[in-house]
Amino acid sequence: MSGLALNAASLRYDNGFTALNNVTAAFDSGSFTALVGPSGCGKSSLLRLLAGLEHPFIGSVTGLAQSDIGFVFQEPTLLAWRNVADNITLPLKIEGHNPSEIGGRLDEALALVGLTDFADALPRQLSGGMKMRVSLARALAKRPPVLLMDEPFAALDELTRFRLDDDLRAIWQQQKCTIIFVTHSVTEAAYLAERALVMQDGEIQTEITIDQNDRDSGFRSAPAFSAACNALSAALGHGMETKGEA
Amino acid sequence: MRYLIPFLLGLALLGLWEFWVSAADVPVFILPAPSAIAAAMADNFGALMAALWVTMTVTLSAFFWAVVSAVALAILFTRARLIEMALYPYVITLQVTPVVAIAPLILIWVGFDNVSRALVMIAWIVAFFPMLTNTVQGLRSVDPQLHDMMTLAGASWWQRLLYLELPAALPSMLTGAKISGGLALIGAVVAEFVAGSGASTGLAWRIIEAGNRLEIATMFASLVLLSALGILLFYLLSFCEWLVLHKWHESFRRG
View (cartoon, helix red, strand yellow):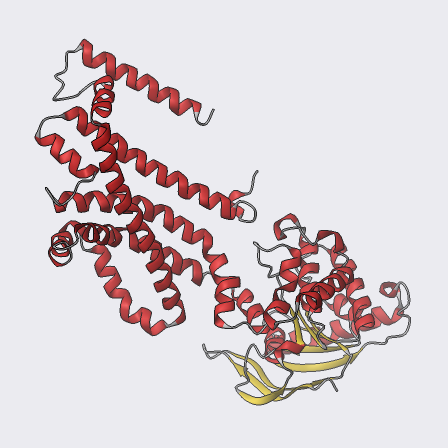
């Protein structure tokens, strides 16, 4: 166990909207979980609950200290006036690490996302994919046991997204951190994760385990991949139907 | 070209003015020729420069205090909603009441023992508001995700202010500063007008004094210096804006 779990948690926003309804879920240490579902199903809310950015209305969250959480937002969320290196090191600086430690972690994070040559660049000089890499590097520099990612690659073109998905898999295997990844893309969930939680209307509807055999090469053309895609599509399609009838 | 064209236009207009005044024989107490204005400027150079210094000091002090007080109050407003709710109506009252109407009161309260302090205060009232509203707006419009990012990093309130809110608000603050700078000069002139004879020795007072003596050329010379001061202030602040923002802000992006 990574110690990360939701116990019958509900989340209601100030405007009365119930984003999560009685959700129970646990996340094993070192696991890669995808949260899949249509817009507004509560997947981002679940992530924010785990990060301690929201608090449950009922139920409880077994969480971690915020310093143990790396969070990657939907947008790169970079400070436009700080260069790549200064963006990545800001959380470390705030946490009060010493300069040599910060320097070491910066180099490590830049190498992980392949941006070693861009430390001095300003965000506006970078492409969308590169900005997202900086954002990922900023989360990784904290060396977090848990990485929470909220549709981080949704705004990118497909080729860039495939490349970042590959890199993320590699980073996960290397760092052995727990990753919870929100996406509305069935193929992205099937490609990245070991397990997918399909969400609908603020509840977890189905849990699907994704076969991790044939991972070595060309997983996108492996039978296990299309099987996972089909299972996820079916779960989501079923969800849409019941919603339509209700 | 950007500087040459307006310069040539100005030169042409001045030439036309000079020609028309001498051709139509316009009396010097109605409209003096540019050459007469230049002569008046040269004759009264010492006095005019002293007056310029006085007005500039009032303007810059008022502007300085406007920036400092507005930024401080804006930070307070964004930190404590209750304080904003309590104070905002009064800030607006101060802003909408014509300063010419408040000025005599301030002169009576403050001006007896220190006229220049009263002048600065009047100019401050005029300059304060745009700086405040722009700073508040800048501090408020920070992307909520950036705030979440700071929360996850465990930032204290002053780290949030220093690393996120103030830099993010800089573009709005500098826009406010450009407006405030111009208004500080207007406020200084109004204050001098109201303060009247003996109390003030700035450029605005020189204009009234020269007007009373029908020294229209000296009036124009003072006016030229006032405009020059305003233009200088504007470009100085624009330069600051460029210096701080050109590397990263969208408004300085080419093409």
